[in-house]
Figure (cartoon, rainbow, N blue to C red):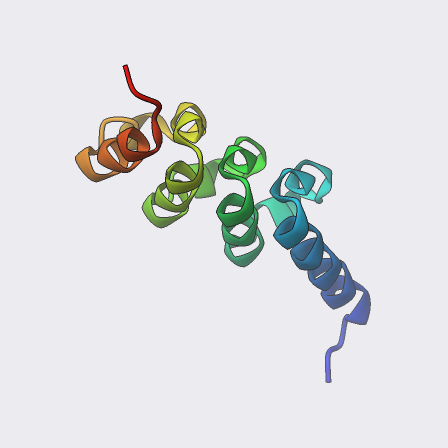
Length: 99
């Protein structure tokens, strides 16, 4: 049994919302923008949702990889140190349009 059903309900609603439309992360509370599960669901649906993630998750390699695999432009929202990571760059390039 959950001691804080309101919090759980809010988390559950956010999770459903971002699975349908990742950009809905912009309407989530700061705590939910810092929740790894919510943010991963959002970026897997819409890579650009990374823009609304908490800074710690914009620096999380797995979150950023999921985002750039969905949308190469999400690389712009990643923490600076991840913008030069070879695997992340390769994943973004795989999503890029031809030159």
